Amino acid sequence: MANTLLKIENLTKSYDGNVILKDFNLSVRKGEVIVIIGPSGCGKSTLLRCINGLEAIQSGVIKLDDEIIDSKSKTITKLRQRVGMVFQSYDLFPHKTVLQNIILAPTLVQKRDKKEVAAEAEQLLDKVGLSDKKDSYPRQLSGGQKQRVAIVRALCMHPEVMLFDEVTAALDPEMVREVLDTMLELARQGSTMLIVTHEMEFAKAVSDRVIFLDNGEIIEEGAPQSFFNHPKTERAQKFLHTFEFEHIK
Amino acid sequence: MQALGLDVLFKGSNLLRLLGGLGKALEISLIAVALSLILGVLFGVLMTFRNPVIRALSRIYLEIVRIMPQMVLLFLVFFGTTRVFGWDLNAEAASVIVFAFWGTAEMGDLVRGAIISVPKHQYESAFALGMTKSQTYFTIIIPQAIRQLIPLSINLITRMIKTTSLVMMIGVVEVLKVSQQIIEANRMTSPNAAFGIYLTVFVLYFIACWPFSILAKHLERKWSN
Ligand SMILES: Nc1ncnc2c1ncn2[C@@H]1O[C@H](COP(=O)(O)OP(=O)(O)OP(=O)(O)O)[C@@H](O)[C@H]1O
Ligand SMILES: [Mg+2]
Image (tube, rainbow over all chains, first blue to last red; front, side):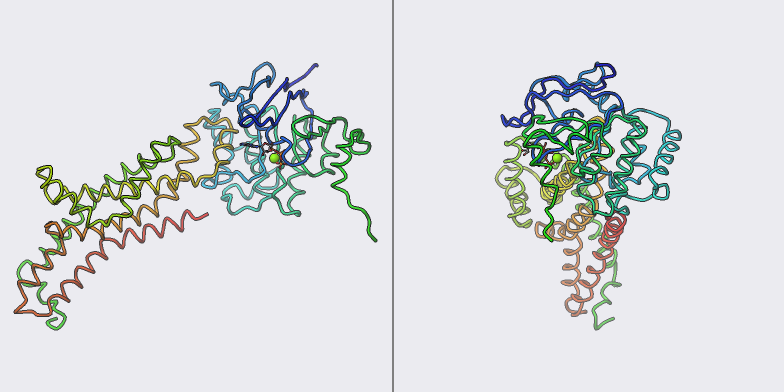
């Protein structure tokens, strides 16, 4: 396929003989936004962690452009710079200010000029409405603000793909929106994104393609409209049904 | 002055002798503290390894230090080694060895605790940003561990300074020993000397340990998060 940025072929991942992802295949085009949904424990986080080389895989190939992502190789840190990741847990560095959190990796890992990075960081912070927080410490921020900083921190590395693992799952409801809006804006700008989420309305709005995962396998995939309105498989129907409520009055 | 027994302080060189005694106690504790900090960091890092042999040995070492009263250790090392092995170990060296043996265990446990208290996702988010293992350790993990560690290790230091008062039991002439000598020598002329002298010792220890306590509190407040 033309413009394929990320390609996963026959990936198998297991923990102590316990197979989590089975013969998994996925191609992601440049600029594509893919939402991955599925029941708890089906392997969504594991998939993202494999793509970022945080997990050793048992077989198969994960390729970014033409480079193989191998968690054990010496060049893995190079590849991780090209893949941004934001986790569910607030993972800012507590001993550094917001600005220091953001510019640490670009200056230390990519050896970029500190002034230039700081200017870019401030610009990005401004976009997510947090320019007044640059000298705050993470403990002084709300959950939603922390996640937006975490997104900015990943973006400042200029990644080619962004991975989001349930970044709003631990947030209070009133803070979910601000984080989702930030991600929508990224999608609008043409970023390539893989998003794991339980926010179905958001999934509909943001994605080019939805992937439904169960037991480490793709059960169904398709455009958001057709997937959400007319899921073909019974398992997808059942899963989507858990997000709906019957009227009782 | 007389009633409180403070007059003895100003007889002859008594005050100077007391200060000299305190100096001896501090000297022993500071050498032992320095050794404990260095060896403790190594021991603590060692304890974070998953090797079962290292684990078992360090557990045993820790338990021995915890269970054994420092005084027993002191007697064991001082009398035990000189008599049984025929080493010519002076009382001060024996004291330093015992306190460093104790301090290393305690410090090691603090270091281990501080390192494992840094959550796993701190490593992962650093790796996800493309940082190498050593970059992660030096800029993310160790600074966070140190913030945990410093207030705790300062408390350990003050405990070590206080506990050095035990070394008089094996004949080191430190501040308590000097006090006893002064009190003995003045039993007739100033019967209340005991109170005045021990009060002075109390103040001296307080002055020696107080700055550490303040520093610990200050850092704790500064780094709380
Ligand atoms: N480090 C690990 N060691 C052993 N098993 C693991 C480990 N991490 C995950 N698993 C197992 O792998 C399976 C998939 O986990 P994963 O975290 O990928 O699920 P998930 O789809 O992200 O679920 P959730 O929606 O709850 O986040 C689970 O059964 C989990 O117990
Ligand atoms: Mg998960």
